Structure formats: C-alpha cells, structure tokens
Image (cartoon, rainbow, N blue to C red; front, side, top):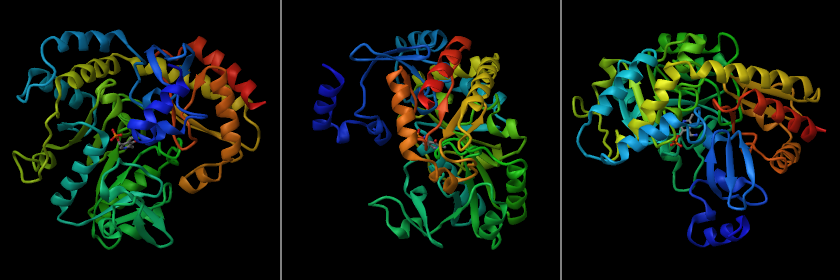
Length: 411
Ligand code: PMP
C-alpha cells in the first residue's frame, strides 16, 4: 500500500493516524517508513530520505548501528523483560555514572516524560517546597504540571484535561534572561528550576555566554534545585552532556533519547543523598513494570560505550562543516542556531534567543524550504520548533550533498 492509502487506513484506528502528534505534521501527509539504515529512511513506496529528524534525537548512532543491533540480538534470546534485577542494569548504571557529571546514582524509567516527572517530585520532597519553575516554550514531556503556558502574567494550562489548578504551582521564566529567573525565585518558594540547557523544542536555542552560570548562582542564592533536562543534550553535546559542555553543575539531571540507544528510556541522575529519597530506600514514590528493561539497557549500554569511545568527535567535526556551509548560503535576513550535533534554521529572523524570537520566524518560508528538501530526499523535522540532528553516519559525503540540496532549496 502507498503512503496515502496507509495514512487513510491509519486514521481509522489510530488517532490522527499517528501515535505522537508531531508525526502528523509531515506534509502533505506522513510517509510510512518500511526500513532504515545509517543516515537513511526508506518509505513504503521505496523512496529514500536522508534523515535529519533522527526520531527527534535518540539516533546519535544512526539507524541499525551494528553495535546496537548486535547487543539487541544477544539480549533478545535471553529474555525481553524479567521483573527482577539483572547484571546489565548494574553495568549500565556504572557506565552512565562514569560519563555523566555529578551523577552518583541513577533510576531508569521508560521515557523523558517519566524522568522529569520523577525528578520534579524528588526536588519537591528534598526542598519541602511546592512550586516549580520552567521555561516559556520549554518542553519536559506530557505530564500535568509541565503542560503550562504563560498567559500575560499568569500561568495557565496548555492542554484540555489539565486544569489551571493543576499548574498553579508552576512558574515560568524567559530563556537567556537571568532577571526573569531572579524575579520568580526570589521569594524562596520554588523547589526546582527545570531547564533545557539548549532549548530544543523551539528549534535550537543555545544559552548566551554565562547564562547557565548565572542560573546556577541564582538557584544557589535562593535554595532552588537546578534540574538540567538533558533528554536531548545528554551524550550529544559532550560525553557528559550540557553539564560538561558548558561547565555548569546541575543538582539533578534527566535523560532519555540517546541514553536508550534507540529503545525507550528515561533516566534520573543525581547525588546519592538526593537519589536515595526514591523508593525503596526513601519515601518518594517511583516504580515501573518496564523500568530497567533489558533491551533498553542492552541498546543503551551499546550507545554509551560508543560515546565513551569517541563517537562524538566525528559527529561534531561534520556538524561544524555543515553549519559553516549553511552560514555561507543563508539569506541576510535569516539565521542558523546550533549546538554540537544539533541545529535549526530560522528563515526571516536574524536573532533567536528565546521562544518569542523563534515564533517570529517565517512559517511559510520554512514550509517552502522543508518541502524542497523533502522532494530532494532529505527529511528534516516537520516544524521549525524542532531541532535537526546529526548521527555518526552523517559523514563528509552526506554533508556535502546536503549543502547542495539546501542551496537549491533556499534559492
Ligand atoms: N524533555 C525534553 C527536553 C524533550 O525534548 C522531550 C521529548 N522530546 C521530553 C522531555 C519527553 O521525552 P519523551 O518523549 O521520551 O517522554
């Protein structure tokens, strides 16, 4: 069946034809992937796409990387879930703590959403405070307290089914604006400030120099715990994620995506003191049937080993070539933002430092560019509020043909 036929059939039994809403944004309708390898996806009609969406971040090692595939093959014949601890979980946790700064212990869960939900609960318990602070335009998954938006001076729910009361303890601040954070934290009632160190859900917005250091200071002065949501940045910006790349220590960090090597995962990491507040040692409830799932552990461990052994060096070098090439061809009224291994182009907008700036980019021009790239066989995320990603398979040849396609698409 072709893409259009499958989409019609899908909409009959899957809400909107998809299992996560962004996938329905692909124009004129989603294509259905039949297989993937390296930097490429193939749809059911046999068309090949060079993949810069990369499943929205997890695929640092690309599709079907032999390290991940072999680790999975090895595990799958020995069981897919146990309900008991397994040695693999211990090995995974040790490798994780070796790579991630300020992480003495972890709890693995099944998604970034679960990780941020647990981290916020933990922070509220540790500080005995009720409020949390998040970024305007930030994203930390789909649990209630973070489904909030700024409405003038008020914070209101951003989803039907979540009441304004459920977000009444959520405060919101502007990214790259230390004064906005100071104003919110000054009365000492906020348990934790959860921040994407690089905003990856309004495209790609990196921190201004010293912003994260100032954030750290303001949190210290007000007794607020700083949570880095490294779901996207973890194991991408550096072996030790954004904490290492920007040289700023967080009190807690949450991970997902790359940490599972392409299988479902979420991870909460912090000091022993903080982590041992979780059940069964402490009284902060957290549990999951599939938490520490052996397949996620096997794929995740394979990915972490590749990161440990230098996978990022290649990705970052190719990333620099790509960004230089894009900078050389962008029209003067547009800009490209990037952090190692991730980027977004904002057409019709010269500077993007926060969510409000990102909203000023020209949506129509984005879709023109995006469609030309898709026609040329390049699948970019279907929104300029998502980030493009690179994998180890986005090598020199892939980068140089991408730049040719981009030049034509921008003409
Ligand atoms: N935090 C951030 C920064 C994210 O980008 C995402 C997902 N894109 C999440 C949390 C939620 O992760 P998941 O989709 O695995 O629940």
